Amino acid sequence: MVRCKRTYLRVAAVCVGALYLIYIFGMLEKTSRIVRTDAKDLNGTSNTSLHICPMFSPYLKGLRKLNLDSCVMDECKIGDKLRNIALENCNMGYCSNLDCKIASCSGETGSPSVTYTNQSKHNITECEETDISFSGHHHALLGQFGGHWKPSHCQPLRRIAIIIPFRDRHENLCVLLKNLIPVLTAQLNEFRIFVVEQVDESSFNKGRLMNIGFLEATKMFNFDCVIFHDVDLLPENDQNIYQCTDQPRHLSVAVDTHNYKLMYQYLVGGVLAFRPRHFRLVNGYSNEFWGWGGEDDDMAVRIVYSGLKITRPSAETARYTMAYHTRSKKWAKRYILLRKSKERMRTDGLRNVPYHIVSVHLYTFYTKFEVLFNRSKY
Image (cartoon, rainbow, N blue to C red; front, side):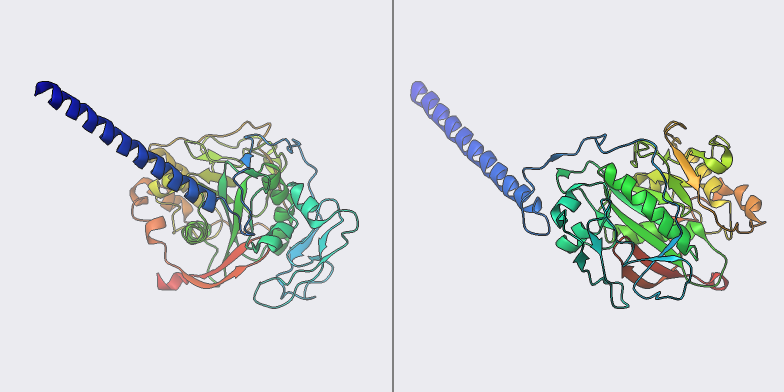
């Protein structure tokens, strides 16, 4: 009787083990199907054979020659209002080898009507596969616009949202994109560029625009790193990797107008990278700094008092040129607010930024949010 009971228990254990293995293999197969489905890109082809992009891309050149030619972004509605300035065809459409171009653009909604020309030597696929220039062909083929790009031959390690606070500096925006996009693509980042434009007549409020950009970008793009980027700072070195680490990372360490030296230890203005959870932890930027100056120094206080550290790449790598622009007048009351930065940081910031989205436009090289906040109402 005892022997039979032992045999029964062994058989039962074997059966339970077999059922468990069947369950595990079934779950693995289900997961595999999900992964295969998710790996399909927008044109329906599978990406399961794609390898992971290298941490340091073979396309990196180090110091790059900046393109400082004046231009403005033709958002399909500017026309010839601005004279003596080059209008880039349909949102600066170009290709590095000059053998494929975007030739036309129509409509006033920001949805490009794209035509390809001059493809006698290289076809669209070869242009796309260079992964060094941002021609727009990849987006047209896959139905992708709005400043979103990812490498087509490997799976990117980084998914980045670039937030650019903006008002009136059309030439700066165009020149920035002509120099920034080749750096981002050479690094094999997946990224999407968001331009947040203040369209009311109140004083410029950079902190609010960056908070708004973060909140709205999270609704449109699943990113693991957000980089806030001044419109007038042009990256000189593509080995300054646009990425987030385990602490906030100040990328614009050495700027030409400061003799390529860090002005002070807690400087975080210019180009600043955050993990989304860290940006929420510090409650974003202050909403109360109007005009030029203050919000970046306030952010440094938030980072330190949230238990985080400011990290930086080397000054030899993190080099930037500041594009020419007319300086705004500094806000006289900024020092009063800075004295109480620690006290305000939990009640003034990302969690209570007041704004109204006037419109959203998806252009080829960026998504633009036009936002309104009237200071007299708040």
